[in-house]
Length: 205
Image (cartoon, rainbow, N blue to C red):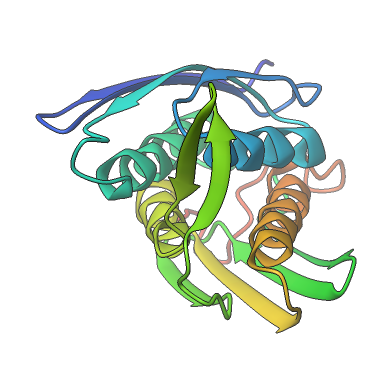
């Protein structure tokens, strides 16, 4: 059984279409206009072994918030659709990820109750980059917006913590990688579960 989903979301602020394969090889071919954000999605796919393709467009003339948050929403919707009733999966997972001077932790539960706890300990100072010969930035305050959109749409609860670290780049990248590994553990099929829904209720709600 192939666990895939395609979601298209068009609003007055963004136009986002994503296709997700939970059982992929880590390939990310998303057209993403924000350099650092593209790096984060590629890291997420590579470490979670998720395949993700599609396009991201948004009102970047306003700021990056709408585009990044709505991408989180669409990605979360893809996970929810691909998982269906969550039958047979492990459901929860966690991972501790070291990245140079930073140590990051993620824990997730696809239990049907959305909640985000994000202690990323970011400075709030935008990252500066060069894109097509022009200076670009990444709004670090949008990091939490992305994950909040994701958990609301995926109907999971997710805890993200920076245990220690100096670089905002390392903190965010390490948290994306930790989340990818935790989510990968949670959505993988548990061969001992024999296809049953992983809840004493008999249903994930």
